[in-house]
View 1 (cartoon, protein in one colour):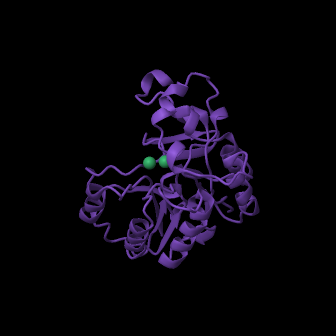
View 2 (cartoon, helix red, strand yellow; view 1 turned 30 degrees about the horizontal axis):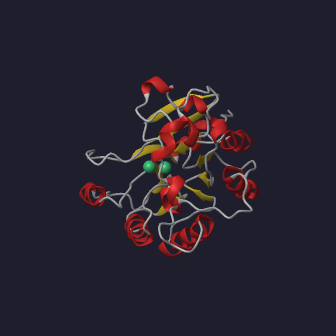
View 3 (cartoon, helix red, strand yellow; view 1 turned 135 degrees about the vertical axis):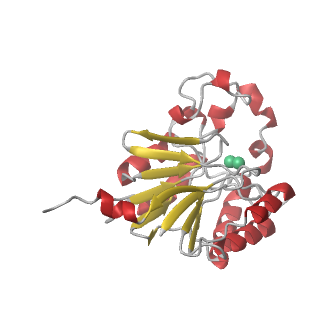
Length: 258
Ligand SMILES: [Fe+2]
Ligand SMILES: [Fe+2]
């Protein structure tokens, strides 16, 4: 089995949905796909896209991104929508809990961002005036830190596993995965990009690979023994998936005894 990664499909945009259809993604009936959030804020579009993907892969894994948790003109809050999105995944045959596939564990990590992630202190707060989450996300008053609320949900799955692990989150786990502000057009990014708590959970799990999304900035680098991959959907790409694991790697990584 091969495990592929992608994020930020944003199929709310018809052009993206059409590009996904064009890409076809045939030939993956024995493979798994990690989708690291931001498929659509509209639940019908989310369901349609997830069902389409689930029909092409043996296994599909997903965590909600910020777009999934938008509640525009709705009575419910973003946490209620989060639970509803998990039900949509369940009904579409998409996994949001850890599972062993092809000799590796895939472990979804729920997450959000916090402004403390801007450790360089160089992000421009004023740029967040146009940040949609400010207007479209609504949190229950009892939640003081949204990032911590999601990280707490992960705790039962944060432990050592009996096979190589691939973790994934929508948000960025390490500030050094966000370019410095002079290289960014959106100079408020570090304030809404990620949370150090994700990295703390990654270090406790000790995965081989961590897949993330959200910033729409590609990444594939090894830091302190973990390969950090972002492969956001590029609709002009004829081959939009990124291979992050093949079942042969488990044998290759195993100690040799003669
Ligand atoms: Fe996105
Ligand atoms: Fe996002």
